Length: 337
Ligand code: PEP
Ligand code: MN
Image 1 (spheres, rainbow, N blue to C red):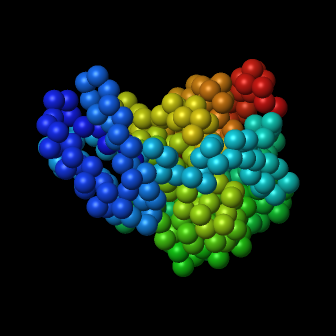
Image 2: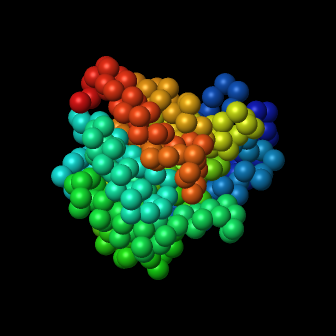
């Protein structure tokens, strides 16, 4: 930890801080600047009491960690990009991937039709929620196991890989049986027991950013996956809660270069939950590709106006085909295939 003392403190105040650092089991290393004294406290924080309490001392200006709090997800730990194997694909490598499909699995006809059209347009992964985390208990909650079976049917019919959300620990093995990627949704992004259960299935994990999650918290949530012996993690930005109401959420595209700097794990962008409106999705996808995203997660429905959830943000098959066509120059410009 680094402890910065306030300017113009007395010798006695300085000595008291040094004494406290030693008392807590750390070795202080004093650096005297022109205006301020900075102390490096050396010791392992996992085995000693935290120095953060020094923040409450009147002579202390700041207490900061030297090392990143996340380790396994950090670029320091793994300088090369990680590529996540998903069936016969790798996400995070040279090839750019598009995951597409309805918000919710509704009927056999709907999911099979969507799978067919997104595959024809070039998607490699089919998305679709079987367990839906709805804001209101009176809204469609998803088909559950029946939805998983329909996804499996679509997977077998088309050869697409599948991504679907896991909502509760007790369903981890069931969901893993039918999916290639487990999605942890925004509402559960810091449900650590769920993250551990998902990680333990061994399936690749797509971790959405929580509604009000700081990037450091998101990276630390990802750390739970890697710390539980699952190295196949993808981060997915899907917009955060801000004061803005023109869009459902504020899609934070700055997370693309930040995650790339801080982590070796792939970054996926979900402009559908981000914007909450279909008319913005194509532009946001282009921006995400240009900024270096590894994949997109896009909602597509045969008839968005009749969708059982998130109708306003889902693309029609025609709009999705146009998106895939218009993305090509952006994918090439980003050095991807
Ligand atoms: C979804 O992908 O349909 C979904 C519910 O996502 P989020 O958790 O990002 O809201
Ligand atoms: Mn949705």
